[in-house]
Image 1 (cartoon, rainbow, N blue to C red):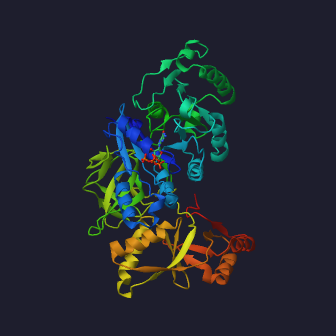
Image 2 (tube, rainbow, N blue to C red; image 1 turned 90 degrees about the horizontal axis):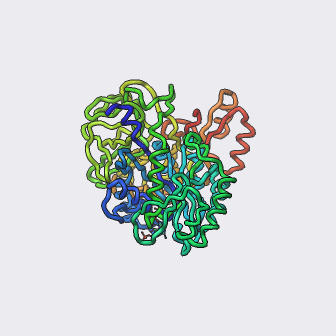
Image 3 (cartoon, rainbow, N blue to C red; image 1 turned 60 degrees about the vertical axis):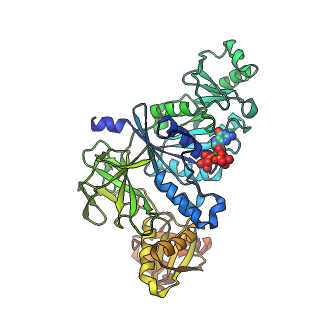
Length: 526
Ligand code: G4P
């Protein structure tokens, strides 16, 4: 098959949601359609449940699961679909942000009763920033929930997405009768428990009195609502969706496998094929001959005796081949991989060649960190995997002086994996760990001990934010450095950050040093 054909038949996306909206259930149903799994219940949830916050074995177990479900590839109607898993727990939101850099589109799952929840808001904001096309799936229609129009309004307001429905529910909860597929003009009737998708009943014209025979008194309401839908929402244009200017909305019930096939069939028709990516020197098209890709996730081996890791690389252009030399840009070193893995049907297997849109897993003994670029020789770096200013901070200290080497190696590697960020006081030399969630501190302590034989303890620090800063005005910069010397630290790349202890301190610095720019993500040049 030609390179272009391979690209055109791929779709790489993530399903995002607030925990419990039904992401795992929907993923599982999609895998069932692809024949990637045979029975329901085969996909374990990659969510760290709230109750597990102090249960380390649970976290380890979950980490094991998340290796298996990091990428789920399957074929459906000659389309190669890659679903990239994202952790639901908010403490791991940064993992999700990074995964979003490796997909070309997303499906957002919303619980019909709960509507738009905070985690969904945060994640969709990132999609909007990146102009990632979004499809919305409103789930759990078999349960009572919010009115469909009300939900559409809520999505527009809270998520900032312009929406247009492509299917419309007939009732909900106990009265849920089915969904009207507005593209195929089919009425799909809901049969709880059957799990079998019947072919829809064609209704080109909803005024057909036959409609009453299927949905009784709800027919009139459907007609009225459809009139309103026609009047209120714009026609769906694929190009607008691809430009992330409009989001189609589908209704269904993942648990009952209802509305899922419609979602999947529409998805493969409209979702974007693998897209190129911006690098620091130029935009790279997927159709280019030469391989390029970037690391968006690193997963440590579960077995402490084998401290190797898997680096997940998104292929952007060309094709990645086994046993071929590629340039690791940051190290300026050629590397060759004898057992690159792909993730098909939930199985890892060694692959000879993978294409743009695919994710390849590379065994790594410590060469990679998140954001690294691999190419066939061209010197370029992919952009767009920023570190965000963490929200929680603690000093980290060595609790076992005999193991200081192990501690620094452990911290180093955990930071490369993107578990947290490390800052070192420029003058004090004290090490500060910054995270987005409280859970990470405990994960770090646990993993340092179990994987590296090192012990750390934390000390509190009053810190509001870390801000990277730059300026062309050397006078201001030097004055700032001199006055704030105790509040300046270096990140892992040696870049200076300002440790602002309060919002006020930050504001004062911004006002006083007007020529200094303060940034809250590390990719401030993008
Ligand atoms: P998540 O990955 O987004 O966190 O959600 P998940 O799929 O685990 O679903 C959360 C809960 O919602 C699960 O119930 C699941 O069975 C249920 N659910 C998913 N889709 C639907 C639906 O369409 N209708 C209804 N009524 N429920 C749905 P649970 O009791 O928390 O877990 P489980 O014991 O059933 O696995």
